[in-house]
Amino acid sequence: MSQFVEQFKSGIDAESTRNDFPEITESETPIWRGGPATASMADKYILALLVLAVHVAFFLGALLDTPEGEGQANFLLTVIMWLIDTTGVLGFVIIMLLLTKLNHYANFSTSGAWTTLWLLVVSSIPVIWKSIDIIEWFAGLIGSSFTNPLPEWNFSWFAPLGAFSFLVMISFTLLYQRSFQYAITDKRIHIRQSFLYFETSAHGISYQKVENLKADPTILGRLLGYGNILVVTGSGVGLQVESLGISAASPMEIRDQSKGKRRVLSVLLGWINVQRSRTVEATDPADCLYGIRRPMDVYRLINELMDSNVGLPIENHGG
Image (cartoon, rainbow, N blue to C red; front, side, top):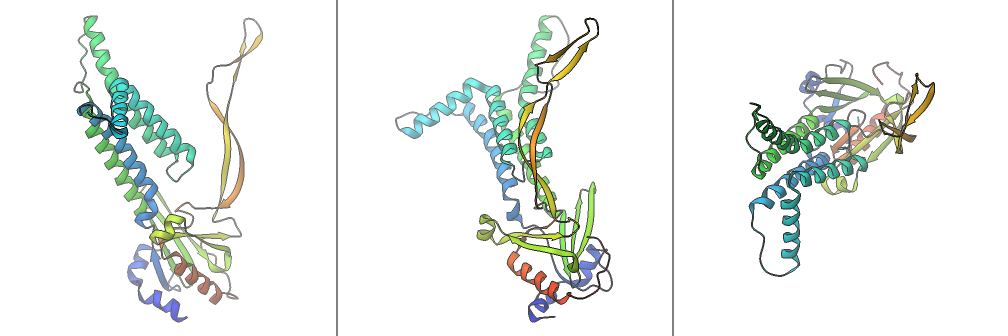
């Protein structure tokens, strides 16, 4: 091994690595291990802060008095506070739905189904709470004994709801970040995922099977010292299908048996994504070395290990 490789090897606890990666064989020598850097999850933390900021804005908008005096800043604050006070819960729902739509449309790493579902839940909590208050009021008019199990809704509840949403998003982001572990040995690249015991996977990629290796640090990654290493094999490991497209309405046809006529409902009962697809390198943390520190050094390390494995027989072990 070269001196560069030996520097990495000397800085790793081989026994601990083998315990955390039981799939590493006795014939392999651990050289490097790591995982996604905290900064690589910046978009998830920013989204959590935006959700908190919306809650705090509606909390303060009802709590604070309208600013006095002239100036653009005071005028802007007056308009914002007026809008918050006028629109109330409906305004909050609209703002949160816009945030949800923009996040989903932007196709960030935060644009997945689970995050979108959580944002929709957060958006609906105040309006559901307020609706139960209205139901209780209406029930009283008709003599029903129904009572709201929740306290009466007011704007002060935006503060604890925002704090709860923020803590949930931060906690799951930390768990998600720590669920990925990567290891490099003298023979393979190992990628392991274990998220709350619900999704566990592990695969090893032999250097002889690697057809393309790419270091892909983002602009923010270059500033903060992290980046992705994309590993593509001939069998398609390291590739994913990316869909680009628009949504089109899907009408539903219904046959009227009594008249023997077919009618097409114009009411939208669903949406079908009309998309084109292309194959690109995977940037999912489960398919690459995602957001690791010192990506260019690790990139060089893998290249040197690949060179030293040229001509060796291929061992069947994972990818």
